[in-house]
Length: 241
Image 1 (cartoon, rainbow, N blue to C red):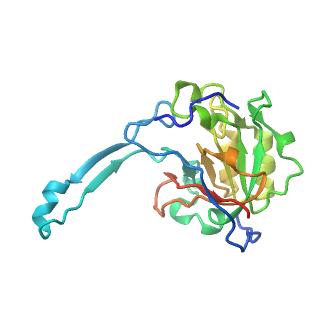
Image 2: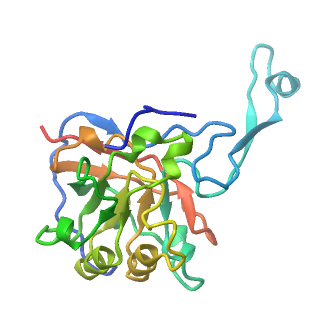
Image 3: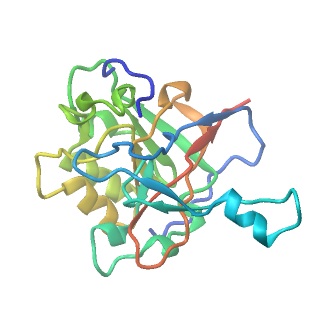
């Protein structure tokens, strides 16, 4: 599935949330559909019937029917969250991710579109007040989601950028690209440093161009699943009034 084909353009008390209801809502997640490709090489989701509408009619009153379907997919599908367990066997899994790290967070959008550089390093981040916030890296790569070009020459967070973020304790870090790491780097330093610090990572965001640099309220809550490290989220933001 292709959305918007184009060119690339811890322990802290996270209490700095806006108490007012704010403005309109902005969708920041890709649609999940059967067979879609999120990350090159991983299987797409399969949606199959468990109980068809026709078969259900035998269980209910005339005119009443239901469909119960089965969804089979890897956790790394669509727009998803990485818990520390994704990287570390002893790390917190999805069921252990606190709502304080995923819901009603002040968003800080770091825009690197049009810079001509794939790397998002310390120079793009230094000086920003990120503590307790959802740091969203806007690369423009989401325009290529669902195309072969999406996984090629993608933007990524550098080791020094990840190390600085890990030291500043944002609530989470998200990116609208195929991976927060350089996929050519098998050490995966961004995942390693952020998840070791208990900071969830969200990959494959979309729609970040619709958010202001600051002031929006971001939410991307995962399902509470034990023994799993990644799962799709419904990411969205409320715009400031």
